Each structure stands twice: as structure tokens, then as C-alpha cells.
Amino acid sequence: MLYWTVTFLVVALVSGLLGFTNIAVGAAEIAKFLFLIFLALFIVSFIASLVTREPPRAP
Image (tube, rainbow, N blue to C red; front, side):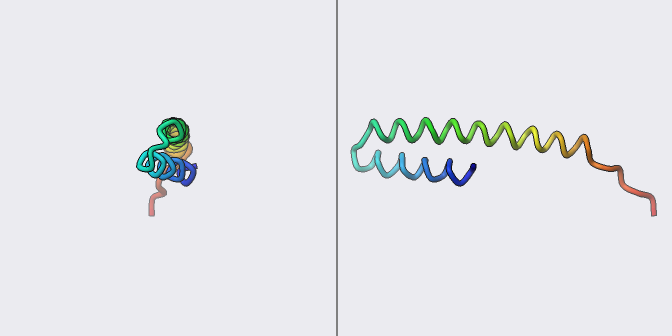
């Protein structure tokens, strides 16, 4: 998912440089949306791994 975010970000930057502002705005919005989904899933995954982790064993 992060790959697609970077892809849309690059598309937004290139199209913005070339003057295609409508395409740049659309690609930037998609990149922002995908990044927020990635961030939310990352936080949920991190919290789930903290909750389900086994405690360290004594030697």
C-alpha cells in the first residue's frame, strides 16, 4: 500500500510540474487517502502485536 502511495505522489509531482493541475490534485488526494489508510493499519497492527506478544521467558 505504501508503494501505491509513493506512486501516486510521484504522479502528482510530475503532473504538477508539467501543468496538469487537475490530475495533480486528484493524484495527491489519492496518495493522501492511501497514506492515511496505511498509517491506520500500521497503528492497529503495532498495537495488536504489543497485546498478543508473549512475555519473555526466564532462563
